[in-house]
Figure 1 (cartoon, rainbow, N blue to C red):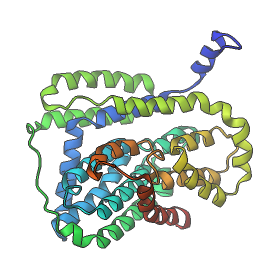
Figure 2 (figure 1 turned 90 degrees about the horizontal axis):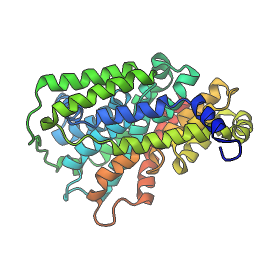
Figure 3 (figure 1 turned 90 degrees about the vertical axis):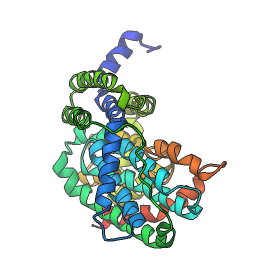
Length: 356
């Protein structure tokens, strides 16, 4: 803009598509509202009663298997919020051991990262490439979804079995002290959520629906927490920055990505995600036009598998970190111990996504 004048910069910005960052902001704001969160928590509580296991273990399994899979429908940041709040209320009390807490948070971060891959709109690293590569719902379910489900189930069962004695000691109390939610409000919120998801590729459409949704929030504010816009804006600005700065990176990325075979690219994505962000990685990959189908899969699969290793590896992780950090005493969550606790579920997910 400085070299060529403002007109050139404006023309470049107009050629960029900001649909995905805007959609992430809107969906995060909608899904963090009390009616959506409360219904999600009640569904998890109901389903946990169907398992023939001690209550504390069955609710733990349900929260860490179905909770992350909810992320494919209500988005990963919203699923992270639901799961982290449930774990904080039920399992991260003073009586819980540090080992259980770290094993759980490592498992949660990995499960959330892969749990949003059943649909093409819920996980930021998938959302950034799905439209460009024509990855629809059927593609995501057959190439990613069932592997994610299997990896989540195995990892959660292993951790639950390892800490079964600690979990049995935890007593669960129902905690819905706030004003009960009328059915029509919950139904109205979920209707708006469905309309926004259905119009996810059309910015003017879902932005207009969101404005009407804000009117509903205002009318029903006695049943509502303050609407959370800050978290969604932070993620959206980050993704928007990727859109602006991503396309000029093609000159150095293209030679690297086109020369790497699928397996080195997969392993490289897993490790790079830990120190960058998986949405950044996949978006930069989407700027390479001649990337083979195998390389595309390797890049995205690696980026979601490695999304639980650090706080910065996946966009929803800071939300989970913020909610659960107070439960780890005055020093908070140790990045090294988080990394160590995420290694086992990352390894299981890595095997499922590559060998199956």
